[in-house]
Image (cartoon, one colour):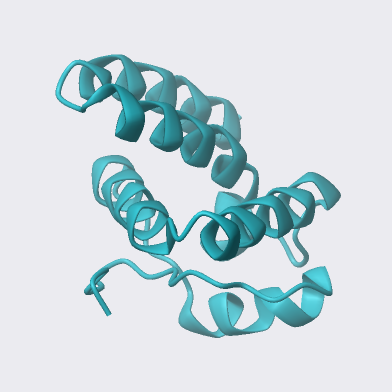
Length: 117
């Protein structure tokens, strides 16, 4: 039930934010929001392990961050998502995500980050 509320909020959040973003950043953030949403329950401490689609999404976003040098933009989308949904990531779970998903994470994940670093 809580995940359904998060997804409903994300839908509304996307509709509101979309008009404020440039077309390119909007498209990237749409992908980040929908893909990264699958990891929220794990990163917030509600699930003991990330679901398989979360790991698949992390691998794709990591590839995008390396291939297209979009790590900063992905980081900003995640920060906007976390602040807008009032989600607090568990730092230890963020650190465990690469091991749990068996994939490197090439972009920062945090509630309050400096995406330019």
